[in-house]
Image 1: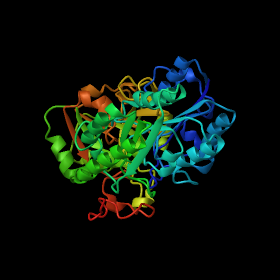
Image 2 (image 1 turned 120 degrees about the vertical axis):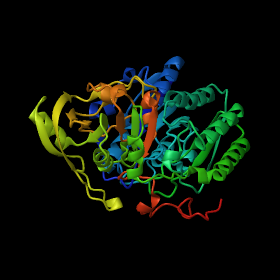
Image 3 (image 1 turned 45 degrees about the horizontal axis):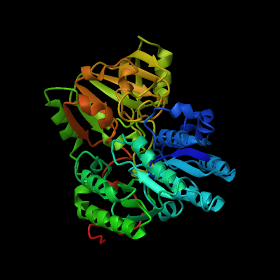
Image 4 (image 1 turned 90 degrees about the horizontal axis):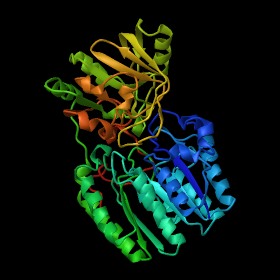
Length: 489
């Protein structure tokens, strides 16, 4: 047998000013015709697909493995190049297709990156068995469901079950190929856009839905609840459920109805209510024991943030917090200036605030700081924690600026602080710090929760904030909860 296995992953924040060219998915040589062994032993759906294919003794074709941190709409050229690579491989003939996708990709030419790709593949190969692994934050569309054989989504946030999800979706296709299963799939969408900070799967309300999905899977091949990605201004953004059964479409539809009704019942619990920034930082200042995690969630690069807003940093400085490590600020200009200054030398420079955010009416506001350059690094490390285990990371050239009470990790590229390696790779021991200021929402829990004494969510500035009133939704279907409280379902 010949299996085509590909990756095309991007969570698109349509309000983000951060561009998404092809280069954002690593080097072009790593994207097209990637080496399968590079993913061996990693916690990814792609690795699971490859393992399943090897177990079957199939020929493996990997035309593309493209993944970029969330940002603005994907450049049209990048989307075409990636999707065409997959389609070309399928057109040459194969027995099955395994796709590691995100489910919330918006490009400059389509609002439904995954659905458009799957439609195109279906035209090429109408009867091809297709397995799709999706992120928990996928915005599911009719086009996605109608043009593949089986969908399974992550059921953890932080996402630590990527491999298991790929294995689940892929195994359904293997069983279908051996005529041991006849997948039947259904889906249902709820008119609600939950707040991302209420989608953590370790506590209610999301934990309730995940538990219900796992219970339903006792009599189904796969049941996935998708919280959706609310910062994509597209028609179908929001929470949905997908069920795959063995030949029983009615049962799949019933599971979707039951799960959707439960999600709707819990809708008010999916609203995040923050507190003023001054109050949050003051609460952190009164905390006796560290590390205290200061979560700058409005500027989270794993949701499309610029990763360079300085409002939380400024308030931390104003209130006199000491022994703070900040990870990380994306500022290529500052990195270049500090490299030029050299290790051990003192420098005064404007840090952060380099990108304007027109979608929320904010200009970039740099913060002038004086500090000493402590470390210059290539910004590469391999996560040892439970998320993306073994997948090589690249922050670009990275510098540590020691500004006295605060030490800054400053990088050329966006990078979510989900692993302790973001500090340890540049010589900062996070457990020795009183405070860790992280530009994250939930993924920090994968690596940092085990060392944290206290967590303080800080409502700063950025395009990943939880105040939906600051975003102008144009394409989103309406009415939808909580934008319209009287929405019916």
